[in-house]
Image (cartoon, rainbow, N blue to C red; front, side, top):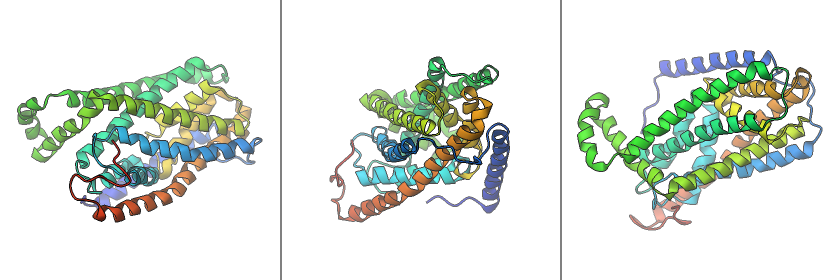
Length: 351
């Protein structure tokens, strides 16, 4: 079991997070009010539809990990979905995205044969880096398809493109590193171990090679393509949900503009904002809206969109974490009654 962080380090993390949140909130509020004086929601039915779509969004986000996990590992549907729904809330609440470790820890501690911490981290890392590349692709595709431009567009689009390119280089470099690990033949691990272990230490060096073995099926089989397909469906649902909220708030923007907003917000929440993505979300939403929405509409419809989209994600994660806990509890209760090694997992293996 991982030891808790020392109090001084924990306090430093929270302090950095809160300072980052204040700075980003200040930057966002210079152009878009953080909360509208009067909620602008001329089409509430579309917002209700977007809220209902949050269930499909969350389930798809949870289930797609099945294709990043090692083939044949008997992960029950309860554990797969429950770990996702609970970890999404933890990711939101902890500062500096430290909650990303929550799902690998939940999966590794479930005691499933063949699923340890390296396998869980390999799956999550592959999923996150793929998301990063898809978001960058969505940014540039959306910019190419956009037809509505604000007076601020010309001044801002260069900075947005540079931010996207820099993020893409980082994500591509990290994905390349994972790919090299995955394609390294096992027979070379012992030779490389003589170079890696003196630098990283024996324990971390062994972990790296265990991680390489866990990554291999994702990069060398059809599972990687299935993960890509599931991720495309997930991001399509995300795009549709955000477009519905835009329309509900009276912002008549198309799919291209919605894709840019999804991408800019998705990249901005990687910044060191506060707990619950306070600051980083608002900064990304304000920056993206300025590309397509004029100053007059930023105050009413724009501020309403930012507030409602933020609350939808936060409250949706809180509500869906409750059934997630129920699913994890049911999986834990079933596990002792299951056959010992090699037996099928109820309600069936996810492979």
